[in-house]
Length: 103
Image (cartoon, rainbow, N blue to C red; front, side, top):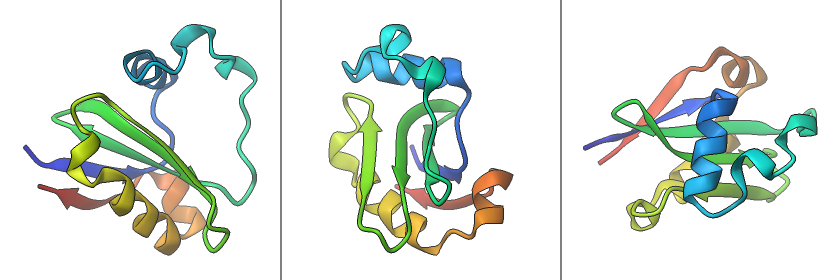
């Protein structure tokens, strides 16, 4: 299956589920008060409508963090997310534009 990368934040419920699967806390991880820096760009990765990855970074800053669902770690998703963050415009990040597919 192809992995679709999409700009923007996922639904909080999807993100909490991904965090639980990846062993990063889920509902008890403090997401309620979570805020991103103004320049941060968010990328989601979906496999057939299921969230399998979430990345956050700032273009040009070199800072990048991502969470990948178990079983998808070897698909190269983080490197594709990082590239996409570098070229995203602020309007793209809020519009939820789909940009890239990974086989």
